[in-house]
Length: 180
Image 1 (tube, rainbow, N blue to C red):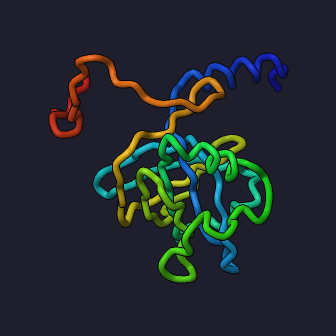
Image 2 (spheres, rainbow, N blue to C red):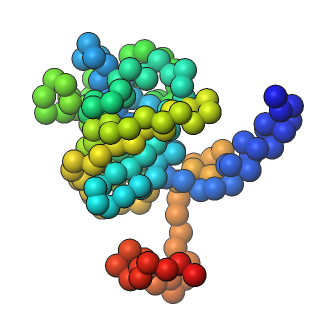
């Protein structure tokens, strides 16, 4: 086992990587809504459309994200820091009236209102990842809105500033199969 100061250094180094902030929602088998804040979102594939995110193995929300279960990933806007903090805590009753909509059907995950983007997914695979579980979801639909993303880096929330004269890069459209 690593010394606590080595683990802190590792955590701080991981924190140098700026990420977006998401709230992932789902429902337990009994229909109870769950939601967690996650910054581990990554795209996996365009065909089929897949993404992944990671959940702590000991999370009390784990049963909501079993194979075949629906979930939603909400990419947060700059002004949604309070919601990110609300869903980051370990507590029951995160779904206060007005914070989320119920979704379409009773089995569907709740929706976080005002998100920059929402991916409606179904769990297609679960993989062990140390003290976390890597959850792969097949994306069924995407809803996007205008706005700025909430960014997390170095233990603080912030915003993204494009470089002056930055050009838009369509890496996937121009990819020839060779990175080098």
